[in-house]
Amino acid sequence: MSIGLIAQSFVDGILMGGIYGLVAIGLTLIFGVMKIINFAQGSLMMLGMYVTYWMFTLFGVNPYLSIPISALALFIVGSLIQKGILSRMLNAPEHNQLLVTLGIMLFLENMALALWSPDFRNVQVPGMVDTLHLGQININTPKLIAFLSAAGLSILLFWFLKNTMVGKAIRATSLERQGAALVGISTSKINMIAFGLGAALAAVAGSLINPFFYTSPTVGDTFILKGFVVVVLGGLGNFLGALVGGLIIGVSESLGGALLPGSLKEMVPYIIFIAVLLLKPNGLFGGKIR
Image (cartoon, rainbow, N blue to C red):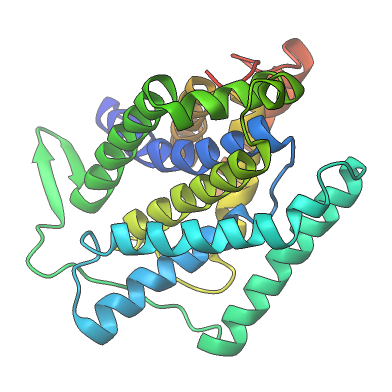
């Protein structure tokens, strides 16, 4: 095992970890505000990928230029799902909420299957250099763009929550729902905005990975499990935890692929996940939206 291979795996893991973190931030935002674990997050990401794919295929729109469109489309879809379905489940038992979001996930996947078939689809960004060389390390350009965009978006969202009235209302609702309502915050609107933002983040993550990851109706299943692992690892409701957790899972998965035979690499993130749950049940940064 060479140092170069380990360094290459570490870099690949960091780049992919940024995407895991972005998916997890959407999950943790929704949980922090609504206290609902959203199984449909991966399917919302899949819809964002299809928006980018069809914008590119039908109209020739560069995948990166279609990101605002997919984010806006999924913000609207997420807001409608929250308003039409999940707003009626806020006071329901947790297992009922889980089943409802699972049902939404299955509906979206089967809808995509009926509309667009199970075929795997790819997008190639015209004119983009696939790989950058840094000494012995090769850096996949689309992955680098995805990582930098995910990090920038995370910082922007953090600023939004800290410095805008809507962001402060989201944080207040996360910390104390009844108290927020007593001071005049419309918690029902905040729930809708928070779920819409979570769906938009999933769409952005999907659009960012489109140039190097296949699109299919079930592609969200690949990310939703890791998203949950990242959220719990970092601490439910904590943005920094979601980002750090994403990097940990990305690096551990990549190093596992380099050091372990076959599919054993898939075990590594879950072993870390179980260990953290045993030693620190609230996650590494457990707490409310911060």
